[in-house]
Image (cartoon, rainbow, N blue to C red; front, side, top):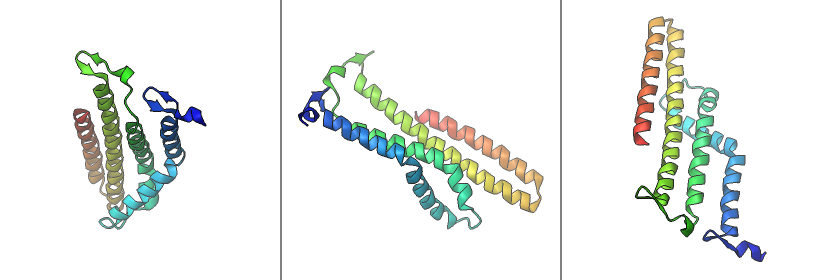
Length: 162
């Protein structure tokens, strides 16, 4: 097992394996983990809105939440590795390490805003169902309009954050 202590790009093979195993475990269990997180979020949301069905909430939020979870865990795991000295170079005066860091932050921000957009879809679904119960078609059209407007606004804000 001495090969695990071999150094490759300023990290031991053991370090790479630990990071890889962490990421693979999260990928394998992302559905279960995100379902648990979505259930916890559901409990927090249910306090304010009593008519929310858990199945609808979980189905709309589980995919973006699972990707957000995988991306955040992968980012934290990869961050524990030492940055290889071989990759210390600049592109137009900017260090490659900074470029990689900005790319990682951008991916996390995009995943977060993807999750926020799924929450907007869920809330609009609730409001549309309420308008169907009240048989008010104009209310449903207003909900759809503001849902789309809010999604565009959140998308623009997300791109500005990136």
